[in-house]
Amino acid sequence: MREIRRVVAGARNRLTLMQWVRALVALTTAALAGLVVGVVVQRGLGLTFPWPDVFLWSGAGVLAASMAWALIRRPGVFASARALDEAADLRESMSTALVLEKSPDPWAGAVIETARARAAGVLLRRCMPVRGPAWWYSPVVGGVTLVIAWVAMPNLDLLGYLAERQAREDRNRQVVEVKADLHVKEQKLAEALARAGLDLKAEAGDGPGQVDPSLKPDEIQRAAVRRLSNLNERLNELKQGEKSQQFEALKEAMQQLRQPGPGPLQEMARHLAMGDFAKAEQSLAELARQVQSGEMAPEQREQLARQLENLSAQLKEAAEKSQALEQALAKSGVDPEKAAELAKKMLSDPAAAKEMLDKVKQLSPEQQKKLAEMARSLCEAGGQCDKLGQALSDMARAMAQQGGLGQQGAEAMAEAGQALSDMEMLSQEMNGLSAALEETQAQLESLCEGGSGQCDGDMMMAGAAGIGEWEEGESDRQGTGSGGPGKGMGPSTADSPASFKIDKTKQNVGNKGGPIIASRLVFGEQVKGESVAEFASAVESGTHSAAEALESNVIPRELHNAVKHYFGRLESRVKARPEPAPK
Image (cartoon, rainbow, N blue to C red; front, top):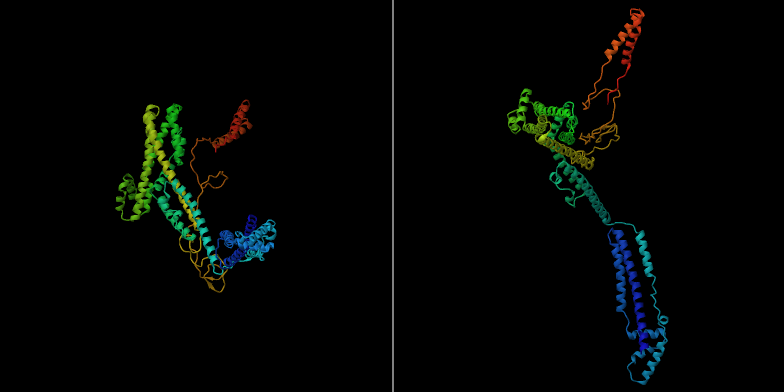
């Protein structure tokens, strides 16, 4: 019976495998047909299918379903034996042997022995080959149909879903691009504000990272424009504030400084007049080091002391000037004589400036506020000049008394360095403020490039309808355009302020004989020239008279050579060209 059971089990497995192949072909064909229908529906209606997942799960589903079908439809032992009998033409010997397996009848034993002998000679691969169904080619047809549908089927988008989805994706992409661009601009602006000592969040509110993600790209840009506009207004207020006025007054005071005389302080005075307070502090510290170490000669120390006194006197004089405030009061309608007296009082007591201005009836509250701020800023600038002047005066006094700086001079030097450091900090803060304002205006210009109806040059102001580029008009009709030879009745573009930027560059130019449009005092060594015009005229007149005297023999002959040599030497001095002055 072992041979019989082995052959029947093999036949059963082959029948199960054929069931699986038949189910696999059928389910694959059905899956491909479903995919073809899915492609047609997706392309026709504009739907979205996750095709990679669809293909993956379709294949896995077909494989699992076919295996499950084969296991469910797996034939039994007796059915497999009957199928084997039919396939191998065994005349039901295998199925009969299985039925008579437990029978004690001798005839049953003979039947089983005959079946066992036949089972030993059965070749399953020959009598029961694994074959597919007659319609095995249907998956190939389905695959070709799917490829054709995938390649040739156009996107009809009958329901408009595809266009809507594409618009949504474009909007999301634009939102990402706009946010990225605004983030870069925010970083640059934050750096500029940091150099000015300002906080971006405190001055401008939330950045683009906190913008509502549901907003459209143009709405995000408009929010950024509003934010930058507020920041620009705030920076302009700071630019016109007390610190800015103080810095301008300080620069003007420094520009009025004159050279304090010959000596080692000229370099420091030059940097001070140019507003380069850091280099002025370095020059002063180097001079103090030379005095302390004894490297400076006694004559130079005396010159330095005189220069310090001179520069100190100029700084103290600059601290007491009130012409700018006098002019502002006069422009506001105050009598010039009264303006001069009021300006001096306001600078002497800036805390009471508001009360003083309240008594001037012709000033409005806004004018009073601006003049009070101006008085405070001028007083602060004057205080800085006075502090530096007093420190320089103390240094000069210490050098005159002790022959060097000493402890008193060192303390005065520290005070002078602190005063210059404060001036440099103010200069850096104002330069940073200007840079931040330029960056803000540049970003506003990039975001507001004159769009129609949104940003017509005035940031968030609505653009005027009908204003466009020039175009040809009709000669006999009135139109809403603004150009052409016809009777134009359209609106004209309004004037709007344009942004500008000033780059400070030093151009190497020379005098080519044109008109002099400006001049400036340049610090340097004095070049003393020598006037030879009158001398040349006298030599020419004397030479002519001597020649006539020699011809008329008025001069004795023995003196002729001496007279010629004398006037010849004078002519050679006149003809000698002086060396050009250094440029």
